Image 1 (tube, rainbow, N blue to C red):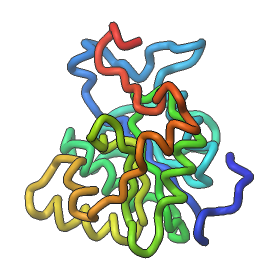
Image 2 (image 1 turned 135 degrees about the vertical axis):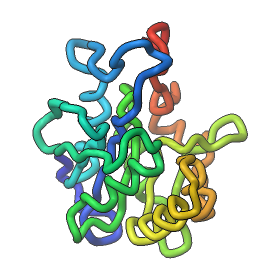
Image 3 (image 1 turned 120 degrees about the vertical axis):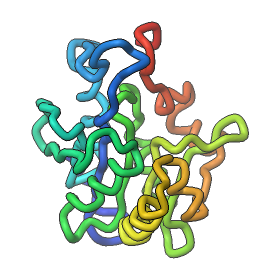
Image 4 (image 1 turned 180 degrees about the vertical axis):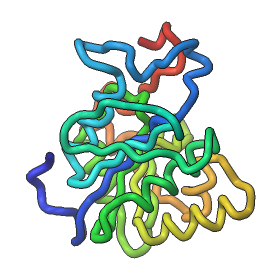
Length: 200
């Protein structure tokens, strides 16, 4: 768990999205071993390095063993997509959590320094922060102001939206230029995710 003081007051929370079907992988990718431990544990441990309250959002009927310091919460409906998973995670965090880092459970090489940079980018005018790369800004990892994100997720889900990318779009996310966050992660390993067996 991080010894750093919370960024901007209040506790920092973390959400690890682990409720997908692994359909492209062909089997449960989150238990695949990488460097002697399950894929999912790598993502959780990176988040634990920057957040003091970490929830792992899993499928409705899933059972997961997670590292100490994190806790499992379940989707309220089966396979409603990552946006719904973020909503479940936001609701499950402790009341005093104000800023939240969100990552995918299939991201084994997240750099904690980059996650901190995302959190540091949050302020009154930026309630969502993404990493820029090659003219794009992938939706994960991302940092959110909890209050603004919670409201936005509810509105989006009520409108039938399921895309995670819709959340930063609604909040007009700030984007950290690739040249800036490359100082903390020169190989851009933070953006690596595992979709197929050949990605391991």
